[in-house]
Image (cartoon, rainbow, N blue to C red; front, side, top):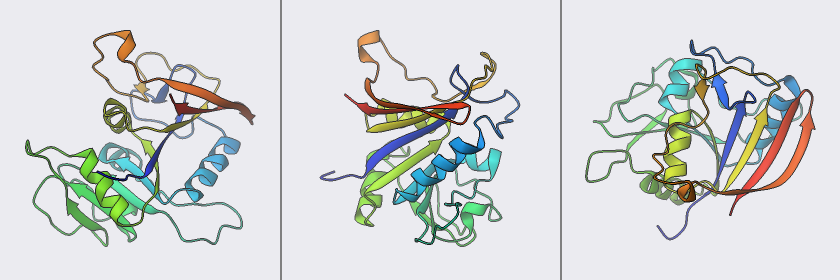
Length: 210
């Protein structure tokens, strides 16, 4: 891969890094002010990317919804290895790209593309090649924890935009980042804090990869 989009991981969590209750309940962890900033972040990116777990749990629109916005909507990208996205999902309504590892079939109005490696698994580098070839230069990754971990394991996350609400959900809550399979502390992905801002009742941290 000679060029790839810049990847920003956006997290909206409790203080202890949880994105949902064990039941999946997650609306809303952060407040209205933080959610508005999230829409502004979407507006500044060419594509919004989520995993199939987020689609099945929340049926997100992944669109920019804020007063005065009239620019084209970002491309909506779903990583869906087994092609489980329902045709009725909001992300299947056009201007969407579903990347899968199985035999292709139509899913609503979305474009479906196969992207696999030699082991039959989703290939993140090939995914980024596809997006870059389509003119996508910036991607906002919005979840879930498995998707975040997969990009972090490949050292592909350039920035993190982290909104943290002043609540605690405990270990039974769903983590914002799944297992990274680190052998030692020195292997942990490292980021430098660039800015901290209070938005409503929440804290917004902006970090860049070291």
